Length: 231
Length: 217
Image (tube, rainbow over all chains, first blue to last red; front, side):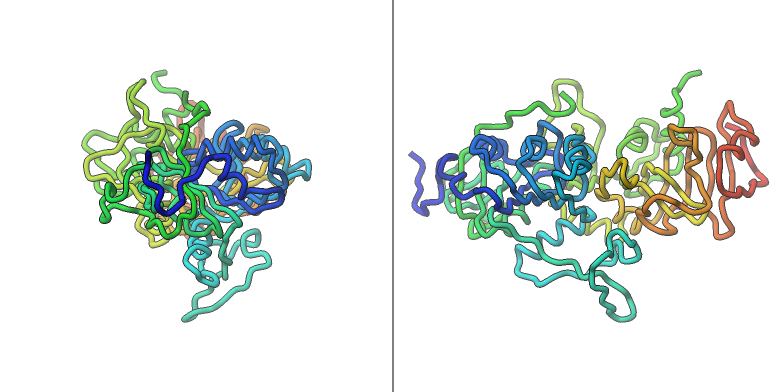
């Protein structure tokens, strides 16, 4: 039996008790890679509706968070693109899904800002672009113009990691790391779905990417349950 | 005819690369460029989902779902490669450390303005990482068809579609021609077989200066 001295290791059923209609949900992953499959499935099964989704993208129709979007569970998405999920485009044009686009690198910095307790960030990406700059404050520093981009946080963040220990220390896997370390920091509650839960002391402190202090709950993953686009 | 049109465009684009460059490739034709690197040219491919040092595609059956490019397709890594989170990947881009980016486009203007993220009311795929790449890469190469699927020119005096970034494109490679964006306007340097100058002029909605060393390739 795994040591659970921090009480963080919980079941999927317990995990989705934190995720309710109308909540904001931030999800790690990039095109579905590095998104937590078992938590997404459990949220689908709980039939949570009207969520605000914050994620790099809307995945593919049946991959990653795409499953929540294409089944109409999301009322607003804050993402960098919806290009790989035609269902998202269709819902947007039908007025059933509101989409706020952030340039990809700006989006992850907004998530980071939310996670590290900053009040905003100054970026010059899109400062001369009417679509991106619309409604945003322009701030001049040393003669250069920047947009004030606001931080993002969420009621619940869910992330996917390769290994985690009972304190919630996490390491990720190759390109499945992507936005996960920042999403992990930006949730009021963060739940990590972990491929392998290992005993305390087994992760090298030098190699831990997300210190467990940011993680409230840990669930054991049942593994990826969708087919990848290239399969 | 050896190569198809897309392959020829990818091969032409690959000629822009020099050993030691850090290169970010967009989806579509740009992603085919690594297959056509000239002999002896070694570049480092960066991917904005957190890979610096992407290698060739894996053999069938050796794909790793957690090792993919930004388009979601399996890749490998070369010796000396590193993984990072997305913020670090975009730090490389925003800091101006990418030597060349190759992107697709919906429209490019004679000033090098790039539109590649939405057609209002019709198709809105979103920005992705294109805005950071277009605004911050040292050299921006657009690889696209010369005209859209309705036969309308994509190279225009001024973009009518929402812009990704202003005055960012340095070189345009299409199925018909190669054009440099200069301070005086577009300079036509190459015409692709089987097209001739007339074809190119007819399919371009911006004035073209014609290079003294214009080549037919």
